[in-house]
Length: 126
Image 1 (cartoon, helix red, strand yellow):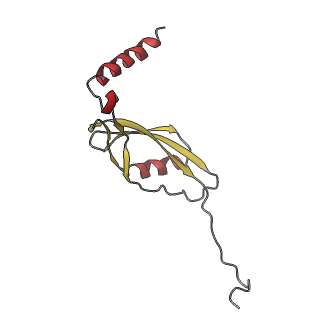
Image 2 (cartoon, helix red, strand yellow; image 1 turned 135 degrees about the horizontal axis):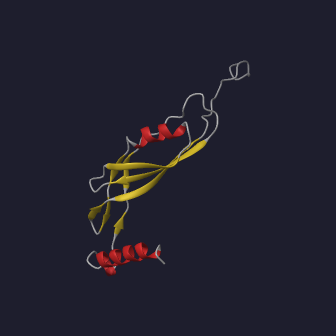
Image 3 (cartoon, one colour; image 1 turned 180 degrees about the vertical axis):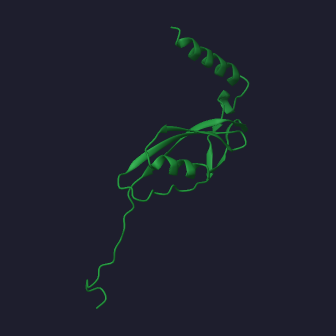
């Protein structure tokens, strides 16, 4: 029961705040964070296995990244994912047109780059 109190308190706070922030039909209109520009993460040299890094990104009311937390690390990919996310640009989330701080998950999936080597003497150049 003690663990439920913070959850119930948060629920009451959200319901109370929601009473003053209503969209059409009494439901708040949420627009999620939008990615305006994204940089790709670089696949680390001398790495052969795939991996996925999950980050939690806090986007402020001005669209700037306020905080990045690693949810799932995968060395050596984690540092490359952090370098890339720091270059991303966002538009903030809004509720009924008012910017709000939001936390979003971002996953970077790394797979080994495929390399194409031209065949010599294959008959294509005859």
